Length: 182
Image 1 (cartoon, rainbow, N blue to C red):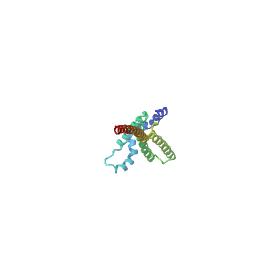
Image 2 (tube, one colour):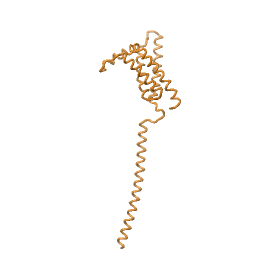
Image 3 (cartoon, rainbow, N blue to C red):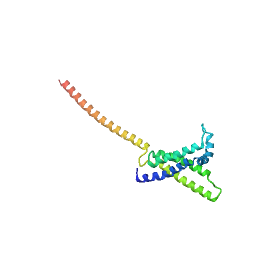
C-alpha cells in the first residue's frame, strides 16, 4: 500500500466511523429521520421493519465498513458498502433538513455538498485497485500467455516430429536400399 493510501484511507473512513457511532448513540433520532423512507419501503418488504433496529444496523455497518476501509482490509468491498450507506444518508438528511429559514436552507445545501463529496470520494475508493490490474485484465493476459505457450509448444512438437520422421525415413530408405542390393 502506498503512503498516500496509508494516510488517505483512515482520513476518509473517520467521517463514516464517527457518523456510525453517532447513529448508534442516537438511534431514536436516526430512526425518526429514517421513518418516512422506511414506511415507503415497508410495503414492498416481506417482513416487518423496526426503525430503531434499522438505524442501529446502519450505524454498525458504517462503523464496521469504515474501520475495515481505514485499515485497508477488504477496502473495495467496504468502500462499496460505505458508498451505499452514504447515498442513503445523503438522501435522508437532505429530505429531513429544516428549510424554513435562510440559514436552514444554507445548512441543508452545505450538508448536501459535504455528503456528495464524501460519496464521491468513497465511490472513487471503491474502484481503486491499489495499483493492481483488474481480474478481467489478468484473465485476458493469462489467456494470451497460454495461447502463446501453446503455439510455441506446437512448433516444438512439429519440429521434433519432422526431425523424427526424416530420421525414420532415412533409416527406412537405408534398410530398403540394403535389402534390394542384397
